[in-house]
Image (cartoon, rainbow, N blue to C red):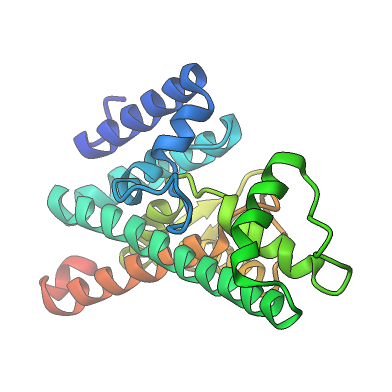
Length: 251
């Protein structure tokens, strides 16, 4: 780890320690530190930070930490420690904010469909509780509104975990500084410029976020979090590059 910058090294260690902790604490760790939908009783304000250090499984943390390892130190050496930390945290917060926004849109859109179909508003908490316990919807959820009920429960019960939003912010900032740096994609033995490889990856995630169709990664990926993190990282770095640094530094 000698080539790693101090911040990247600290982030790697912190994420690994959190992940090891979840192996011992199990569901309690996710209940406490994952980012829950704000209407869920598990929600806590500290989760907007702690969720960035939580991961779902070994592959989830591996790919996030691999990206941080590959791009983080290069970016930190270019912009400095304080600005790197700012991008990392602000991208993580932007990711959480956009994902929660779309969770609210999904939740209240589904709620409107249910109430329009005749489900009483005071039946919703009972429906959620019953469905989470039994895995089945109550009798008043019929074929015409079962998809809305499924969407509502999914938004309510599914927590957000992972450093992906912050990592996407790092990747977006990296592209603005080193757009033409040749990168190698796994199993493809030809160099691809960073702006094409990372830009293409962003577009794949944007497609999945808009359509709900998964191309890369598991089906429960928080694609809007990836988009939010990338947009924040891009905008922050774009502003700094345009206004805060000597232009010659970016050549």
